[in-house]
Every structure is written in structure tokens, then in C-alpha cells.
Length: 258
Image (cartoon, rainbow, N blue to C red; front, side, top):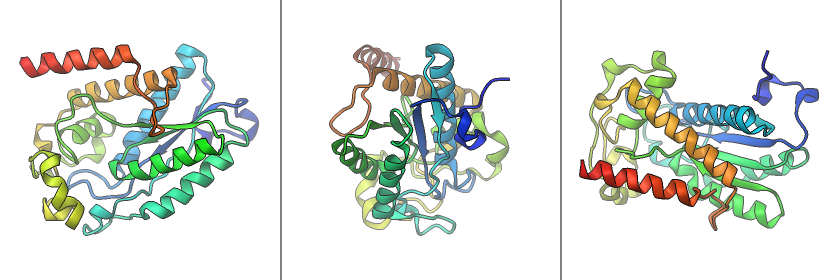
């Protein structure tokens, strides 16, 4: 029987010496009428687990996946019932103490962030922790060729692939399909509901499990490449290897011309 990489399933005697520890960070926020509140957390957790398996099986790297942090900075969704946001300061303190505690027994710590609203906080924390001499960085759960911003085709497709029984496509509706750059001023000033009554930014009706498999596989490949490359940018984010970035740009260019 394979040894689990999930810390929650191990005893202390089964924890490897100085492992790489992946810490998924998500949110508890609305994802339209059709997706669960923990969508960001579920995707970050699944990506971290898949990445851990690959790094362990293919590269012999001891990896542990910590229990996910399911509360994030989601104030822009607070006007939707059910959303739970702890904001920047509370999340910042939580992540700092997680790193300080992990550093007693872990090797590297990498946050796997599944929610865009957490980026400023994670960046702040990682930079402070690096100054304190901790081995820490973060990676984004970003989909190659993303077409929408929130609860649209991309997230819905990935959830249809990962947990189809938790997606209610009968309730899915097309949301605001404008580019995020156009929506951002109103969204930042008044929250998501000011630009979308349903909470959806994109079109989940275009989603499919097959598209979700493609997006998720690309995400996991990207995370593994960043972690193996271990090139930390000024923001504390692990950068993509140059060869992979060039290949991605070429693929995106081909898609735009097709």
C-alpha cells in the first residue's frame, strides 16, 4: 500500500525527514448558483495532492500536503450569503505562524494558492518569511489559456472533472462575460455583486469535464515545473522555467491564430 502524502492521514513517525510541504490555500466564497463555496480550496487541494504524487513518484522527493487553509481574503464576495472572509490581516498572521511552525521540521514550504484575493497577502507573507531565513515560496493555481474570471467555464470544467457530483449544471447561468480588466474598478469599489447578480464572471454553460481534465493536467504540470525549478521571483512566487514559458507562449500564439 502506498504511503499517503496527506499530513492529516499520517502519524508523526511516518513524516519524512525535512520534506517539501505543500500548503493549499483557498477560500469559502460564493461560486455562482452551481458550484460549492469551497471550489477554490478543492482545486488547490487536488492540485497539491497530484503534484505531490508526481514529485514523489517521478523524482523521489519527500512531499507532505498539509491540511488546506479554507478561509481567505474574500471581501469582494461578502454581499453573497454564505461567504466567510477573514481578510488580509488575519490571513497574514495565520500564514506567518504556519510557516514558523512548519520550519521546525519541514524542508521547503510552498503555498499552493487557489484564490486571487489571497495574492497580496501571500506575497507579503512569503517576503517577510524569506527575510526571516525560512525556505518558503508560493505558486498560483492558474489555468493555461483561461477564458474567464470566476465560476465560469474554467472553474466549472475543472470541478466537473474533479468532483462532478458537487456541480449542479441545472442551476448554471451565464454571468458577466466582460474582460476582468473592464470589471475590476467597479468590482474593487463595490464587490462582485455590483457587476454580476449571479456571482458568475464568465459562462459556465460552456464547461465540460474533458476541458476540465485538460486544464487540471496543465495546472499540475505547471506547479511541478515551478517547484522543481525553484526559481523564486521578487514577489516570492516560483517562476516558470524559461523553456516552459516559451513553449506556453508559442501555444497561446497558435491558438490565437487558429
